Image (cartoon, rainbow, N blue to C red; front, side, top):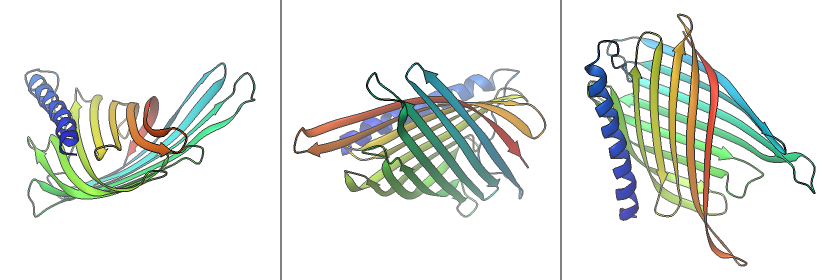
Length: 259
């Protein structure tokens, strides 16, 4: 377990260094500055609603997804709710078109500043469910501490928790999270988010990049690219021990409205 987390956390550290390097590059340019992605410094609050989706098809399958999210941000709290519903239909030469996957994915996170410091308490919950899959009953809950770096331009947290996966059972897990956002100008912004949760043999890793284009004062259009890898160990009487790796990439558009 020590070797696993050393390797994975090293990758997250490299990712953080790249973000900081980008920070230094943007600071030297006259057309771009770094957007604060963290808690407000003054007593005020703002709320955001996100709604979007995507569709893809080929000769024997099609897939669509709906994404909705909510975010509350103040000088002491950040609350986020992210919901995804993804459906895949497919057919073969012998079977007609039918539903193959129906994923429900709900993620809730809460961050709270501790005693006006740069440290914050992080609370995290995620539920994934797909009745057509052997593995997608996946519930995780974790809590831990995070810290703001470079005047709040970068967030990183380390959390301990519990995960219950269908077919593989329950386990204690470690969750590492990192967030940053860049403002290229008054119209275009880029955000990066990375999560790693699991233990030595079963783990999930997720990377999300968001390109945001402001259309009006309160309305923005976002292009979201998400990469997710799930690794599980399955043991059966017929095949014995199996290492299952599921890799999924998705790109979708969504609207962001702030009020």
